[in-house]
Image (cartoon, rainbow, N blue to C red; front, side, top):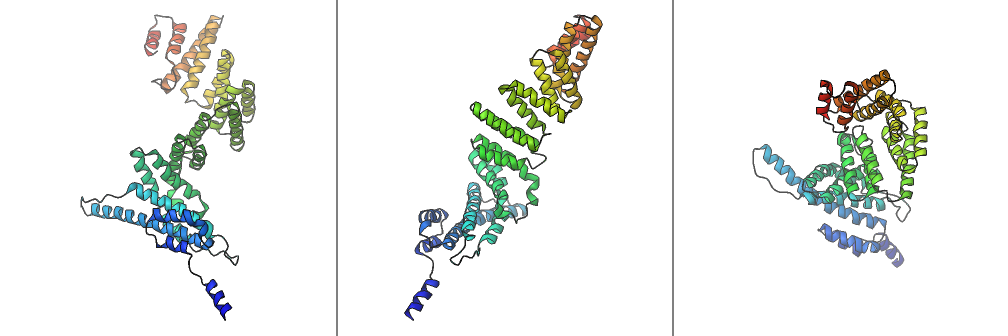
Length: 397
């Protein structure tokens, strides 16, 4: 009988002293410290899950208090009252982040087998649903702290929003409502992560942003810029080229990636640069980036004729690029100046002027292409110094 009583006491033993102390706490910071300091003293995985769930409860109590104040303010405004009760912006954001972090820790232990080898999660559904219901506050809170110049707060809140949305713990939740703004939040979270020197996080957020068609181009451009700006030596550059090649293999028609590979080879190996562009054009003969870069390679090699050939093709592939028309005009002007046949020279100057005029039409304020002086020279070469058309071109230079 005594042995049976001992066995019974063991079977229905209450919480450990360490857990009891945690469960009595009404202060999040105090309870969080106790969990950290006494985690190894908790009896088993079930107690650890219960302890972290307590932290979720305390964090959510703060969330409920602050969101309640927000709701009261909204109701007061609807009733025409100017009475506004301040709420703790940072406290609300931090509490949501704390709730997310502790819910994930709780679930980790909640999903572990008990003494009998069985998995009986107790907290995951409740925590998942109550946190998901308030998680979107992180978007507006991030905007609020951004206006206050709190970069670390922006990264914390927007990063937590993106990370939690990607976490399998929340997979069963409805993600449709946030699709319209997730990409934008992820893009700016990536920029803040880059500014904080956290490239792993930045890349993670840019990958999420790239899933949004409206953010894809900006996210790719900034991601590549960020990756390139972190190169410190030749080995880093070679590793970056390998990363770009992997990206190219999955998206060979992506002009941003093509241009990035070209740019890296330009500084590393011009023979490889030309080889890459030629091989790409064999597969995609109308690739604007490859055609334009082949033209610029010829320009840099002082080969105006070849440069004009490639740049004509680039302009045909993308007829709205002022820079291409400016370089095309310059190549044609050089040919015109060197031509021994006056008729050929005249024809080339006319073509150069057409290219420069197109550049002016596309970029009248010279924001991206400085076409002015070269355009004047082409008019000068064709019409002479005193022609009114040359004078007009001189005024534009």
